Length: 462
Image 1: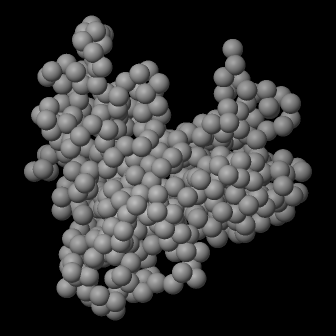
Image 2 (image 1 turned 45 degrees about the vertical axis):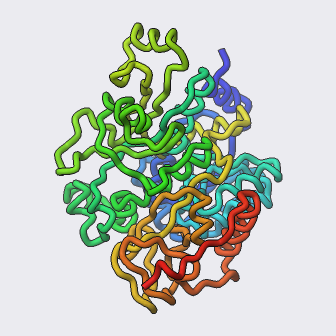
Image 3 (image 1 turned 30 degrees about the vertical axis):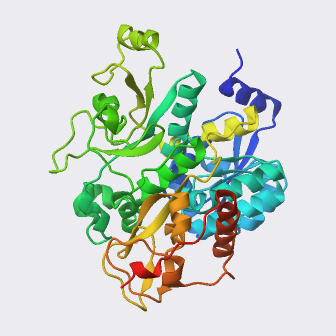
């Protein structure tokens, strides 16, 4: 029998493990670090972090064996001696001969673009855990990676990759995908949450917060809907599915009700049409817990293509909608960084990404949490000023939507009303920024491909 684990074991036996470099030793990176040394055929060659001390602390607190790392060695010496080394220079790590796969885990969209372009330059496969960068520029990054002959992949264990896997299962088995998505915790008022209110809403204990793994602005980006919008945009782009026309609805829904709720409106559901993405909430609108919720899970809703298949749904006990035509498959949990090794193995042993941007279907536009005034400086994803709203890419282009991934540090030159989507015309920006220039280049490429003209956004301002 030949599978990923046996192929990895063969690499271990041959003394030729996969050499991996990781950029970022935060929560997700630490989860991978805690597991990678347990996988045969894989060697964590280097950890790049702006704070070497943080990287060292990650090794220590995750139980990484002390004999496997040496923070005093150079990158070349570490590879030669089979040790994990620490560096603050991600560019040098990417350029190091011998490293085959780079894991981008910074969460910083501008850094993610820079690192991906360096991987393309140096012919290194990249796992883009940085969904912010993937949604900001993934459609063009993936295209450039294919041209360079490297693999640009989503991260297994993160929800977009797991959803993409379910979509692939459905299509490979011959089913049409009605809806694909994830569970989360959301109420309409959460859109306006700030780092000052996030812990009141989130539900972590004081003891959990004291561990130091919890950044309030980062976690607020999950709560205010931004992260769900980013992840569903990534899924739309990877699976050629359609975002809702007015953002995610976050309908309350338990796992047992997925096919009942997530079916087209014409059949009694909440979807505009078949072939969409959506996120379901684990809370009812009044704040009560949803029965059998899917807060940590992912799902795909499929349709029986004929009466015979519909009968099979019933015969094999699938939970369907009331008509029997729609059914769901789901995974109740995801383990994010603990599962990330699947991506490394799939890329190196099968030549396949674990999910990959294929088109530009969805975008996430910065949307005002409150009335914003001329001269204010945007504070980015999960902050006090804006949240990310999922939009169709064509609609974003029409309004010259300001992507949430770049809504940090830019100064407003117009007033913007609460709940309005921001435009490039609302902010001062410079295309001397690599991330801005690359995103603007992508917009122009797809504007031509879509045949979309710029719309009038001035009338929407104060």
